[in-house]
Length: 98
Image (tube, rainbow, N blue to C red; front, side, top):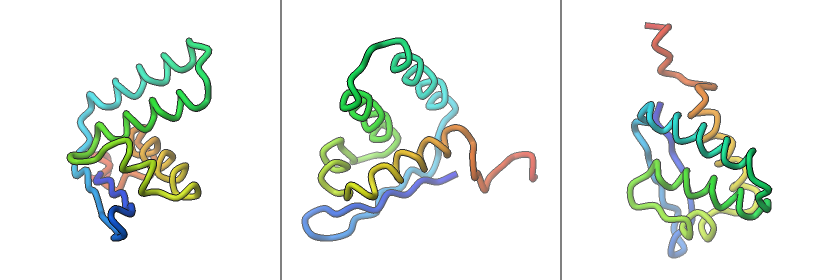
């Protein structure tokens, strides 16, 4: 499943695409969530960790790109969409369908 993020950069809309999510990213996601659950982490640190994970899925995308290029309404939607893609929700390329 390909992921797309549309964000503002330099006054223009930029589209970043992640055409493939390797299974290793699922493991990394589980480790991230486990570390968050096991620590008394401030909400801002939790968000930073999740954003850093999202950025790791895309070439040429930075944490600052997301924080500066997404609105406060768009950011939680992007986090949710990436989470669903990692966990397999809404996957159009489900191998069971082939």
